[in-house]
Image (cartoon, rainbow, N blue to C red; front, side):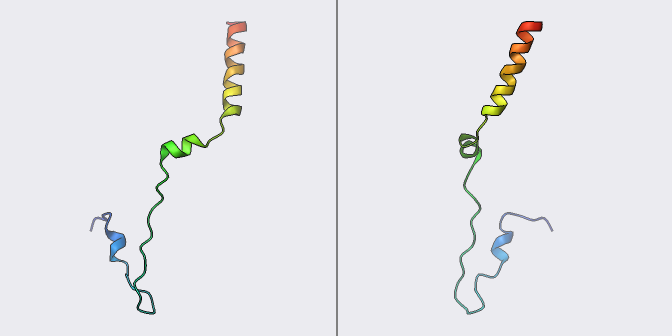
Length: 58
């Protein structure tokens, strides 16, 4: 059988006590939020050094 996105719903919706349990939601943090908080100064510095070297040596 093929898995679909509702396969988590098949999980028991009741705890051992009998009270309904909450379904866990996936993270809502997307690519934009991840990229927003990444420090790329060292990468930019390395690229700029390579550009400078290419300007000098051709």
